[in-house]
Length: 89
Image (spheres, rainbow, N blue to C red):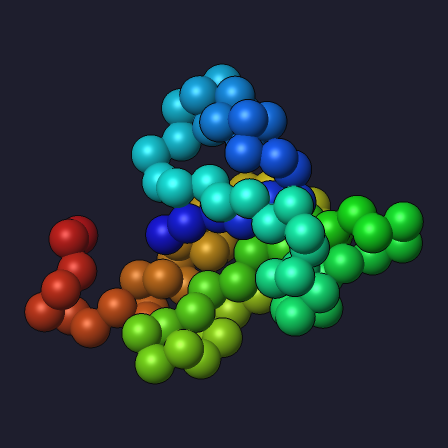
């Protein structure tokens, strides 16, 4: 799991520390990834979106807006895309 934000690395670092994130939070300050995934909105601000991408690179689940604020749905989708032999549950 990783996160991508359009904020600068310093801001991402502070945000990750504040929330106690245990996964990498990458910076897309040039907004290339946001543009490629179609989430760059008005005024070049990224819309909050969560993508679950399987090991084959296929998007299997998308949460947008307020749904993307709660990671539980994305985590459930991850469980569905993880082969049973590699699950930790």
